[in-house]
Image: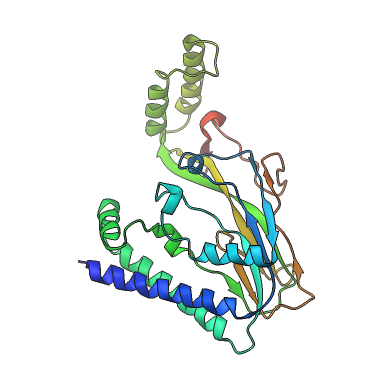
Length: 290
């Protein structure tokens, strides 16, 4: 049984480490700083895949203050829901010749892992919510879990992009047919009339019915895109991490190419991405062939 005291003391330690990091950054030798402000989102927005996201770029002192705020953004505050997760993409390039900032970042991320591990020991989602709410009111657990990513080597480039996320559900042929049967009774404003809508669903049922009983199906529905940081050393030596919090580049060098996060448009399709062939495009249903 995880006690209220354990949860609170673990969080307090994490919060202290974040505050110490922010204070140390304020007196550190910051070479440059960028912050890419995103529009506010609602709980409903979190479930959608937007067509466009406008990005406002900040630099200098304004950007630095936003980055610091981002690291400390752990509570519901004015968001009105613990399910709303604000992204804070940005970049702080800072000198750390004595390694103290790196040590602090490692300790912050270790404290985040410890808190997450402790919370996930609680058996169910409902029990977790109650335990966290009682010990640390208004905490957004996903915000507390988010790592602060950093690099202390000399990359060729640090660039920003958008990563598409998906909500994935696997199901059997029987489950897919049951889902389609239920949807045939729904009204759909995009079709001319209810009879036409039912004909569409019936044709989808025929497609699913033609599959073998052992067919594995998947619904891979696009959700919100999220900022990503791409760190490249060579063509083969590269990696990417979440851009939900500002990225920290330690001991930056002039030869590293620094990018920006541009506004997102769904029309800008990356041709290198897989072109999914859907069995039923309307609900993003795929047949996972062996």
